[in-house]
Length: 201
Image (cartoon, rainbow, N blue to C red; front, side):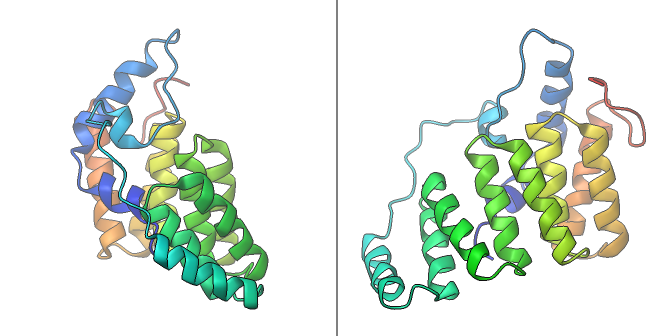
């Protein structure tokens, strides 16, 4: 799974600072939060240039797909190439095609959900994560991303807590479980103790 920007970029951030911003913003109903990637939502530098698109790889994969339209592996590699270049709308197109060809692949389904989130479609991302968990109820990357989108895309901290607690119960020592634990600690540090209702609800 290549499209892990949400998972590991956010896991490395200071959850307390970001979630503190979310909580403060929830109390200002006239200023809804944007459905943006967490780095942008946290007020970090967003003027950096996106990584360059590997045009040669795109052309190579397009040739493979043209000759073999049902080659799910090539389709997903093409989606990954676009994602890595932060060309999320193109990534969505090709992940959707990858899911059409391989509908029971939870990695591709979750990558599609992440791409939906980065194109401002938090609700659609969450729907896709639910599909991923239908395929594999123990898919840890899905649960971590589900919590992140609930927290940052929907400002649903209680929902994020629930997703992360499920993840920790399943795989406490995994990288995703450790990131989920930091997320819960960040929520508590930001003044939203775990187990309480969403302040914005």
